Amino acid sequence: MTSEKNDRYDYLGITDPDKLSAASKRALAWRDLGNEWFGEFEVFDLQGDFAYEAGVVRRDPSALIKHDGKYFVWYSRSTGATDGFAGDIENEKVFPWDRCDIWYATSADGLTWKEEGPAVTRGEKGAYDDRSVFTAEILAYAGKYYLTYQTVKSPYTVRVKNEVGIAWADSPYGPWHKSAAPILSPADNGIWAGEEDNRFKTERKGDFDSHKVHDPCLLYFNDKFYLYYKGEQMGEAITWGGRQIRHGVAIADNPLGPYVKSPYNPISNSGHEICVWLHNGGVASLITTDGPEKNTIQWAPDGINFDIMSSIKGAPHAIGLNRDLDTETEPFGALKWGLTHEYKNDDYQYIRGFRGRRVTTHVAKGEASE
Ligand code: AAL
Image (cartoon, rainbow, N blue to C red; front, side, top):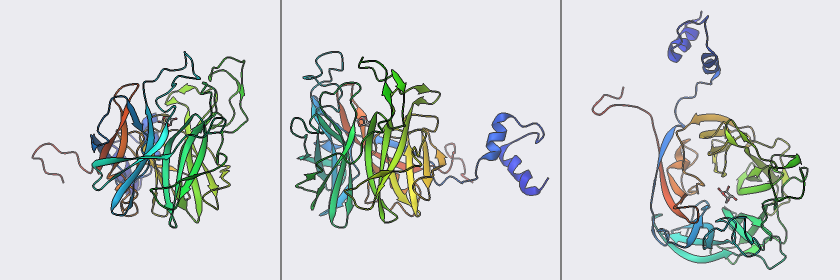
């Protein structure tokens, strides 16, 4: 056996190279990556208008961008408790993110926030976005600002399709101009079974995004606009990793589209809210909540073919990254601090801060680290 191979067995603590357990065989196939992508998080309350407020939902913060010496963030905002789907869905509120508008807030230090008011509001009755506009992300590009967000048209049934809209402005203060039609829609190759409003009953599930396209996040990458999103599939199942949730990407030459879904979709087999950033000539992605590869950080040199770079204990949900941080130098640099949301209860969520730090040692109190 070569000494290199010996070192590898020694590093992995393998007793007998001729008697490899299934787990040891998997470990031998791992790439040797170092721990540059490994770290931990803490979350904390914010002040000012982002302190928890009973009766108000503030959730799904966008990325933070800096303008005029201030941080700006956009988020879903609604009021009142959630009624669910059992009652009068025409007049009640089915989810905390139902009947939302997109509001924005500013802060000098990222800790104390001032709510500025609505940025993008629901459309008129009959419009594709008449029921809720929510879960926004921001891209600042070439002096213009682009908000991408989810849209729902009334009635908000269980089977209603969710789409993605875009609005643009010359200033983060607005005014915002909304697209006349969605820029991204679910695949239409699934077939519901029966008339009951039940999302688990299908004759054919269709593509990974046959029911909902969610969590849109626009990056300018390789001279094109990459719109990352979460797909929800008709007939979603629970697997050994949890809900069947995967990510996709749609690419355009211009920020307003047309967006063409990548033929390589889905580009993840796990995950939930989109959290992507540019790093080292490629795209990094934090995968949380659902699927066998949840709680991993992944990276793709081409923005499409992602590999696992680290497996972490967990991460804050619905992260709004701080686009003002240097994400290129350190793999974990994008995750130093930003925003997240937390469920105070089923009805009300509020926006909190998070800090992330790399973890490089595991030492007892007073113990030498090397
Ligand atoms: C979130 C996101 C989307 C969903 C809902 C609000 O975590 O995935 O935004 O629609 O939950």
